[in-house]
Each structure stands twice: as structure tokens, then as C-alpha cells.
Image (cartoon, rainbow, N blue to C red):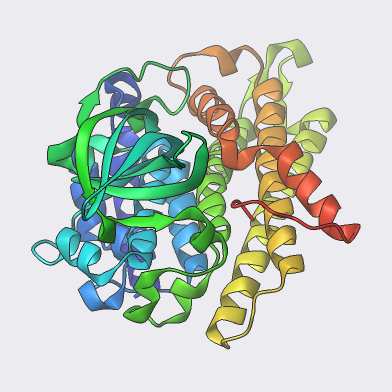
Length: 388
């Protein structure tokens, strides 16, 4: 199925690219684009088979995300995030999964994981209140995964949870007005005193330990992968894809371009430009190759029913944040060699530069934190972090 989805997506890319400016200006991915990608099966690639999903190897999913991101960074970002939630929901109880998908298996779920909500234990579950920012694609979703803190009797944080909340229990506030990834509509979600039954709550610690109640019904290898491996890779994939797409269009444009500052000679004949594109291409290739190698190895362990070594999980995070760094290095090179043309609003370099830099500041792309975790592991020190 993965190959069929990629083929279908490639046929949609010209239309997605044509609507990229509208997504940027209207600050949301067009409904038409989401409908086309839904029909192509993109959002169901990681969804459990029990609900008609493909439950596929995640590497092809990341490839699809990169291709979409090459046409529109915002669209690729929304696809990657919402598509990953179709996997994460499979870690919740069967009852929670049925609530979301039994009537409509195409239902989408957004998120905001920062533990900004306050959970108060009540009979049968919790009462939840809070405000969350950066819920990408929330206007296309009917449910949300939200982070919450469970306090002890003294009011001190006791546990960090992820809770599943229906659209009827929250309000979306339109506050998204930013310089990059403008089309993601990553608006605020507000909840006031909503009841969350216990079956719609999962401990973040359990996810980090590759456990979840949903594994009782979703027994395949995909749902035995670490949350951090999939989620952080899904955050980096659109950044790489936006830059890779920009590289392709930029090199094509530069082949026949004449540069007045070079005495009217062809841009392609400039040795400095040649070196620049070589550097950019190498950074992009390294980002893709390391990401696919690591995610593929993690999935391979899950397929064989083997414990996923902490060394591999740490290496995956190390290379994931470095992949983002490499992509940023590549787009900065392209931005610089294009000269003044980089500044024109709406051109591929300008938009990819904004989108890539915006994606790079996501917490999953915190380079120093991830590299420090890897270093601790190399020195034989204990690593305790939910994002590994």
C-alpha cells in the first residue's frame, strides 16, 4: 500500500504546490488538499489495521511527508503530525480508539503535548482545564491529544499524562500569525472543566517505556516502537522535505540563469555556486540517509520482537536533531547563493527558508538536549527522558 500512496501523492503535488501560497496567506491548509490526501490514504498509513489503516513501515510514511513538504512545507507538517497521531492513538485503550474511529475511521486527531493542563481526579477519571498552544492542523481534527500534569495531595507535579479530548470539549482560538509554517493553523486549544474518563488517559512514562494499553489489540511491530522515535522523526521530516524540494527547484532555475555581477555569464558556470550546491546536496542526503537508517533499524527490531537497544534509540535522536541542523545549513546556503531573488515574497526559496527555520525551533529539534542525552549514554550515565 505504501507504494500506491506515494504514487497517488506524486500526482497531487502540482495542485498542492499551486495552493501553497494560499495556505501561507490564509494560515491554514486548504480543505481541498486535506480531502485529496485523505482519499490518497496518507493519514492512514500508520493507523491500526483494525480500523482499515495500513499500519505500515514508518520509513515510507516519512518519504511521503518529505515529498509533500517539497511542494508545501505547511501541508507536509500537518500531514506528518496528524498522520503520526493515527499511530499514537493505537496506544490508547480499545475503548478510546473505538470512540474516535468506530463511526468514521478517517477521523483526524491534533495535539499539543506541553503539560499545561491541570488534571483533577474525580470519579471515573479526571477533570481537565488549561490552554495549549501550537496545535497544528487542529481545524481539520475532531479530537485532540493534550498534555496534563497530575498533582499530588500537596499540589506538586506527580505525573505527566496525555489525554484524549473530543472537539465538543474544547474551543480553538485563532492566534496563529507567524513568519514560518504559516499554513499549519497551529492555534490554541482551551479546555474548561471537561470530564476525561480514565480510558482516555495514557502516562507519558509508559509511552517512553514502549508500553500502552492499545498493544493488547494492536499487536503488530509498529505499535512496539518508541514514541520519541516516531514523533521526533515526523517533526524533522517536513523540514528536510521542504529543503529538498527547494533544492530541486533552485538548481533547475539556476542552470539557465545569467548573473549580471558575473559579467553576464551563466550562474551554473560559477565555481562558488557549484561548490555551494554540492554542500547543500550533501547535507540533505546525509539527513535523509541517517534518518531512514535509524528508523528502519528500530522498526526492524520491533518486527523481530527484539528489545530496542537504548544505544539505538539515542543514536536515532542524535541523528534526528542533526538532520534538522543539516537541512537548515542547506537552506541557508541556497538562500545565500540565490542573492536578492531570495527576498521576493512567495518564491520557493523564501518560503522554504521560513518554513524550515520555523520547524527547527520545535522542542523535538532541541539539538543540545538531544546531543547531551547521547553523550550521557556514551559515557555510561543513566538517561531518563521521555523524548528518547
